Structure formats: C-alpha cells, structure tokens
Figure 1 (cartoon, helix red, strand yellow):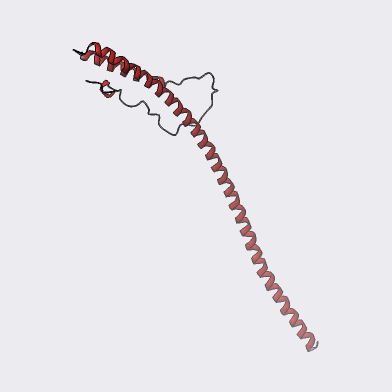
Figure 2: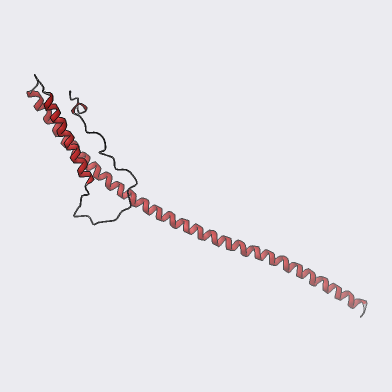
Length: 166
C-alpha cells in the first residue's frame, strides 16, 4: 500500500468517526424531542380532563342556582302569604282594642300572642312538610347548598308588631 492509499483510508476513517458522532448527537436530540412530545400529549390530556371537570362543575352550579331560585321563590311566596295574614290580624287587633280602650285585659293580649305564635308554628310545620305539586314532574336535584332557616326565630310578640303595647 502506498502512502496515498493509507492517507485516504485514514481520512475516510476520520470522516466515518465524525459521521458517527453527528449521528449520535442527532439521535439524542430526536429522543429529547420525542420525550417533550409525550409530555405535551400528557399535558393536553390533563387540560382536557380539567375542562370536563369545570364543565360538570358549571352544570352542577346551574342546577344548584335553579334549585335556590325555586326555593327562594317559594319562600317569598310563603312570606307574602304570612305578611298578608299578619296584616289582617293587626288590622283586626286595633278594632278589638278600641272597644276595650278603657280597661285592656292582659289575658286578651296573651291570647292574641298565643294565636300569633300558633300561626307561626303552623307556618313552620307547613314549611317542613314536603308539598307535592301536581303540575311539576319529580326531578331529582342535588342537596341544597344552604341551610333553610327562614322560620327558625322565636314567635313574635304583639309588642314587636306595629307599636303594640304590653
């Protein structure tokens, strides 16, 4: 072999070594790209799952809002009925009191307080009994998020209503 042949073989060996090193570096970079692609796919799946959970949460929130709106509407309706009943009782009380203006009897006042307390107790019982409405279909709803405490206060005394005296 001549020197030129050996030189060309060495040059070819060096070029093959350089190509091998470049191939090895390229393989590392491609592997990093594949790993980041897998990580990106995992992140997209997690984001999709979070979006589905948020969508379900919004649906639950809408259902709870609808339930709260219905419950509040029922409370307002019952409250208006109670206000009308109490106004009728209050309007009747001065007429009865005007006849006994000279000597008001404490027993009559106590009887009125008992009637008013009984009326409020009946309202509480009516609120606790589930009412069946024939025009609505039975719909299962989630448990309410708030405590129903509209009528949990003590019964009113006549002194607390429109300047009544004791």
